[in-house]
Length: 85
Ligand SMILES: [Zn+2]
Image (tube, rainbow, N blue to C red):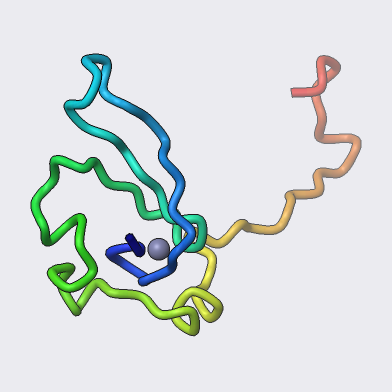
């Protein structure tokens, strides 16, 4: 088995169904995509996963952080309240 989204072979089982043997949840170690075994083939099998949503190692390495973390606000001491709020 490889990841449906990025084709990476390192897949971890996250969970088993409360009733044994009904489903399992797996997650990719590279792109963090997770899927339940009972989802349709377009979500669980690489060859059926939509091409528009597939990722490569290059896509992941060059992905930008979303949302961007803004710089910390530095407030002058005088504007702080006595309780620090
Ligand atoms: Zn993946």
